[in-house]
Length: 146
Length: 146
DNA sequence: GATAAGGCTTCCACCAACTGGAGGGTCAAT
DNA sequence: ATTGACCCTCCAGTTGGTGGAAGCCTTATC
Image (tube, rainbow over the protein chains, first blue to last red):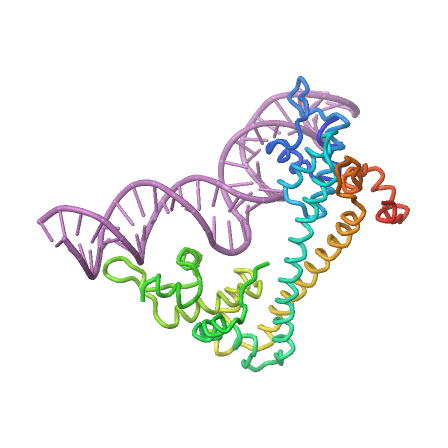
């Protein structure tokens, strides 16, 4: 099967499939004309990858999950550990975003959003570094990135 | 002021400050020896950037916020719009992560996590793309199947 | 005067996970 | 023979930095 059909069947863009071959996640055969020739198990693997990525697993996690998937002697404990670590990462990310959201929505609510220049959002952002240092010392947390 | 002091005062790594100069967010002067020479307003700007980044604003948002901050004729509506758009992005991200979390935690709960190879997590990831398409079409709840 | 430590400089490379595009070969049908 | 839809490789760019090498500058110490 050519890459176009595989793309359609797996739901992944052809570019992504080529990329996954590049980094060694799939190893399709090659036809005489140089085209990639995918077997059923390649398509299956790619669908697996697509689903794992959709759940937010990193490529490295995917690589490990795929290895376990193909290993008859795996234990479900190994799989579960990867999933639980990922779940933790998701939880931390959600917590981080939720905190951002809280601060930001507080600022947005306080902003008139009219023709005047006075703006609590800018005032907050302009908090002097000394003040931030003060907040840091006293345990005020100011760190988080999307 | 040299970059080391500015790093300490603004809370940003020196590397990041150089990067911000690279992309035109700050324009420190230069001393005779070639060292960057930061004025108070540069430090202030950098602190502003650090705070905006901590709230998850993109660099482009930061650039615009900074421009508004320095514009006496800005309206708070302009600022609020940027903030609200960002808030929406955060909300979408939280929703996305929350959905991932739900699916994944179901799977984790269903997994024995023992020495046996049977694993609902892998089974789910291995769901054939055709089945996913089918479930989509019929509105079937694939999570219930587990 | 030599030298060592620390701070500063530039530049290049790298991270994740792709995505876009250029330039060109292949295939099926008209 | 020529279109048009595929396919190929390779290079560059994305976001927001971070790490490291090679090499000045400054200050202190011996």
